[in-house]
Image (tube, rainbow, N blue to C red; front, top):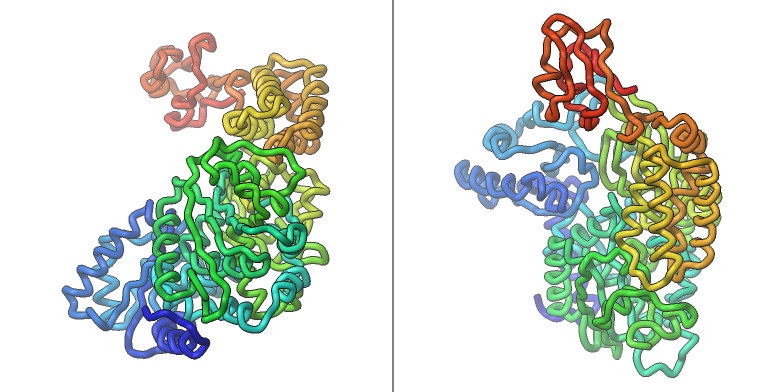
Length: 626
């Protein structure tokens, strides 16, 4: 691509590329079909690259080369149904694709125009099978801003991003807006940081611009070190729309007076890393990164820095320390990064999703963005929906959408007729939300008020089979492993918290231990150095607040109501139901079951390891947890 210096040159690229994406964006039938195949991590792990290879083979065999385009995209969102394939201009939605499905689809649909119904997504409306992704219940309540291009364009072709108004916001900023204009627009939009605490983005930029006016160097950083268990929002944006982040970081650089940016991304995201490398190289080739962008005196360059997977490096000062080449440990604040950040210079750091909103705010206006969401939480929020839910996937909804809407309508509810028990938001830093708060509007302040937090956007759903003490223990184990060890409250305190929870799940705790655990939680919150330690007690405090009866059952009754904690569990054979078939005895790995054929068998509790193999093999429902 030639270097783009003027708006006319940018618009020329846009016009040419718009014809390419019109089939997908406008449903325009230009005689060529576009077959979009998800190339995100989830679908790739399920074999989507084999789907692409088979498509190429079958298109050649059927003489359809040049008549059908294969586009490898980012995540469509409905991860539970991958690999996903969509045919445009019809928008026909095929799910759970296998290579052996492709010959039939190519011949019947791509060659003869007849969709293959048996491979379509099976959801129905008024008795008709849904054919389009946008018609599904999963999409009906969503509003995609940060995810607007994910699953729609090829992330490895800058022209397709430009076709979707790419780099128009950067041109507008550099040619018609002052630094203060940009910052005031972001302030007026109400955009808050999507990485956890929700600090106003415009305020952060303003501080970095104004507090140290004579700085010889400033930096812009992107936190792509997404470490929460079950979270994959930022990864999906980088895989599906990397230029949205690159363009936004250049805008942030202009706003604060920085000419260098760094994207800190974990090395476990190889697809995201590869696409960022491609996108940065393409932007440099087009003159959209580098010196004198759009013929102005503004220059901006981007570098990638790979993290080794330390959860603490999601904390801003630890992340900057890691970029500097040192062990990723947090620093005391103040001074804040806006004054003394990366390499001791004023620095702005936002996460991927925050940047993904910036260009749309610049192009559509602050009022447009502020018109979505709630009074204090504007815009939309992306969630990685997982756990005990039908529709695992990536969801973007306006702030203020209720948890019930996300779980029951978008997520499709709890599988197997089970009851909803809790939802964990904010990962190890968040809390568990009980059924009585299902109808609370999701925003920063409401979640904090009920003992949780927004976090980066992980949302894990739990049903009646989950033990909430065990859940708290799981997150504490993660935090103990990920503590950098710099401060005593986190290094020692979280370990003691985990030991107390372990004691509870083994039936060895007293009521006095519950009081000690709660006091320790508050001590760590008040004294830990960084956000990791300060929020580590949240899963414990929220479960003790809403599910205290489960803690008491473990302590007083020596029972786990959910039947999860093995040390409090007994597996027994109900004599009245046992047919004496001996299958359980044959399957038991430790020889704990004995008896005579056609008579009830019994389990030796001293030998039983509670593995559950006998239960899963009993055909008569005679083996139960007690």
